[in-house]
Amino acid sequence: MYLTVHSSAALVIAKFIPNPLVAFIAGLASHFVLDAIPHGDEHLMREHFPTWRNLRRPVGAAVIDGIVMLFLLLIYVATTPLISYTTLGLTIAGAVLPDLLQAIYIVFKPSWLKWFYSFHLKIHNFTGHKIHWTQGLLVQGMVLAACWLIVM
Ligand SMILES: [Zn+2]
Image (cartoon, rainbow, N blue to C red):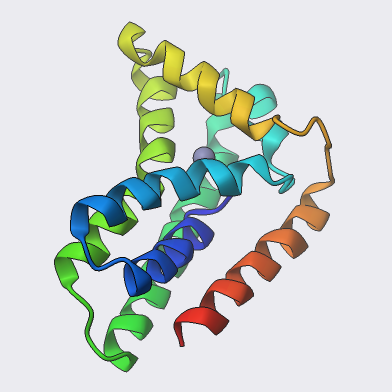
């Protein structure tokens, strides 16, 4: 799923789990739970990441996604009674860490991350139910809306 959705789920976790370490672990776990839901980008890593030329599209999407994520986080911090920045930061870090590790593996191919890359792909294809990316946008939009309805 997009970083925007993962970080929005982290907001929900940080709202209800004040302990930073527990919230970090819950954020990390939430990443895999959300990635197991069919969300339309499961094919991206298989089909678009193997060559540098094909990296342009997912990198462009990630940049836009990151900007939207930061914009939503700023809105949240500016409009919501303060929860601990430590808890919030660690929860978001846990929620987006798997995709960061995935990106590190794709770019630098360190052998110590190969098991994680394979694990992450297996989670993405856990249900074996493939949907079109436009349907995936709808799924991710629904998860995003649910998260924001909970945190606001
Ligand atoms: Zn992921």
